[in-house]
Amino acid sequence: MQTKITSGARAELVRALRERYQTTSRAEKARILAEFCAVSGYHNKHAIRVLNAAEDPIEPSSRRGRPRLYDEAVRQALIVLWEASDRICGKRLKPLFGVLIPALERHRHIKLDPAVRAKLLNIGTATIDRLLKTTRLVATPGMRRRSPTRLRQKVPVRTFADWKEPDPGSMEMDLVAHCGESNSGSYVHSLVLTDVHSGWTESVPLVVREATLVAEAIESVRVSLPFTLRCLDTDNGTEFVNDILVQYCVQRGIELTRSRPWRKNDQAWIEQKNGAVIRKLVGYHRFEGLAASQALARLYSASRLFVNFFQPSFKLLEKTRIGATVRKRYATPLTPHARLLLSPVIPESMKVRLRAVAEGLDPLRLLDEIRSMQRHLVELSQGGNPHTPPTRSQDLSVFLASLATAWRAGEVRPTHAKKQRKARNWRTRKDPFAEHWPEICRWLEEKPDMIGRELFEKLRDAHPGVYRDGQIRTLFERLAAWRAQAARRLIFEGTSDHS
Image 1 (cartoon, one colour):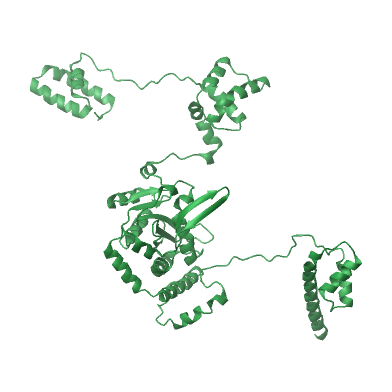
Image 2 (cartoon, rainbow, N blue to C red):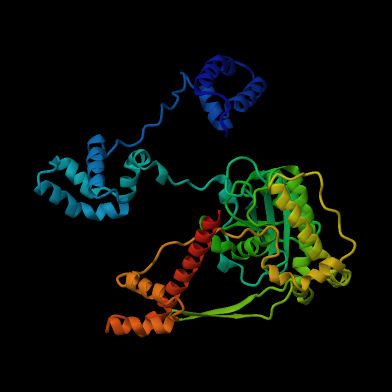
């Protein structure tokens, strides 16, 4: 039974009760015995033997294990051998002892006591790692491995190959950080969930990354899904692997799994949506505060319908490898809405509701709302007024007319930021005309209207065998640059003369 009191207190209790127990009546003995067992934790029969004993019970002393086989001398010798082997693991170090120890002794680097030497040759790999544990933690603190925690042991691992062909309701989940170029401070996150079967994607903004908010966001998504949420697969972040989410999934009968650490391909479906949906909509700006979270919520309410009803996606059917060539075969692209209508798991009543929603949606109005909120988010990221969200447009004629010519302006998403490319002002190859360029400039000054081909032929006649046919294009580029420079010089010199 479980011990209730310490061993010292139990011994005092026995000494206080023994005489009274041995001299009292049978009924009183039964009462004393019941109380003693309840307090001490002893079994009934053992308590009787202790109370009827003639002297104090001998309490077990502190646990003494077997004598230590590998003393400090062995550990110090082991540290030297570990360092001499460039700090390899115990499984690799053990078979090296037969070579390493004689080599070090032969060159008089170490001189081992015969007893220590015999122990090192007989030591096991697990004992090597145990004796070197403290040394490794001090020598390589960054390499410390975390043992599986209680929560990680509760949440099983699911790899990308374990999905097979799940029914609708098995979703992967991840967080997308909107921190911009700096990860410091507090910023908005997007909680993204995607269904493995259909590709149905849901997004919810979170003002801060916190486990309670994550559970509340999942609940808001769960009640609006067109299918039953059966499984959630996450990464190993503490915002997902925690008591709150584990308890939430247990109460609602949702299977919770996690990917392997540092294996993003285990969550290939959600990682693809993070880029193709969230980053395409929001970009890489930094968003902070409640105003940005509300703007993202309004953006996601429109993009949710646009992506799930009007954005077909590919689905991989099979992948075969022949040598270094990988061949992939995809099914016909379908929208998540269309895939759910084809699934036999979805009830007919839900399919009727999905068709009714699809018939009432205007894709142009959804796209206009998305563009409007994207412009608002860019203004917020640049320090704009957070209290003036745009009103929903009623007249779409202007937006419809702009679609015919929008392609001329290039990228139309306001949240898209073009990467700034540095101006290139250096050569990657040696200039083939550097040696004779002064001579070429003299010819051009004498005859400025000379064409490039004529100039190239004259150069080859003056220096036979030096220039190839393929170098004529390089000469054309140098000639165009010379003429542009000559024109600028003429303009600036003329301006200085008249000033």
